[in-house]
Image (cartoon, rainbow, N blue to C red):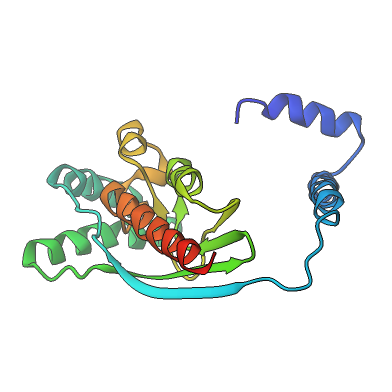
Length: 201
């Protein structure tokens, strides 16, 4: 988000509140899309919906992450205002205990793929690092693929590069599923899209 200062300057020059600025962008984007779409009307469309529940491996908690989490819990426990953060961090230690006991269960995902006409819509419960969505879209055989995220309860899902880079979205406490699971989700999303398209053309 390296253009924040420039965007903020333009917003102020337009004399718009942040809400009005966002509204303006949404309306303009819709108007531009509709201007093209209305040139290609259809009275009937193939409409196909595929659904499956897939299993993804949970992100493993390392011993180093356990040590860091214990330090953070000790630090934040000093202030009652941090109670929610402490509970959030404690889940990392609880996950590690289940991991050591061999009782970790896979993360279940409801995967929906819908084809209305020459596009497709695929859902997942995560907030994906962009690379996964780009893979899904670029490898899809359809005219356009829409990846709808945060469908049902989910967490961030980082790539290996994101984990190495650090940051809130790629730390263990923010992830139920790690890079391996994200890549598997990508493949599990592309496969039904491909089958759906080839079987209904």
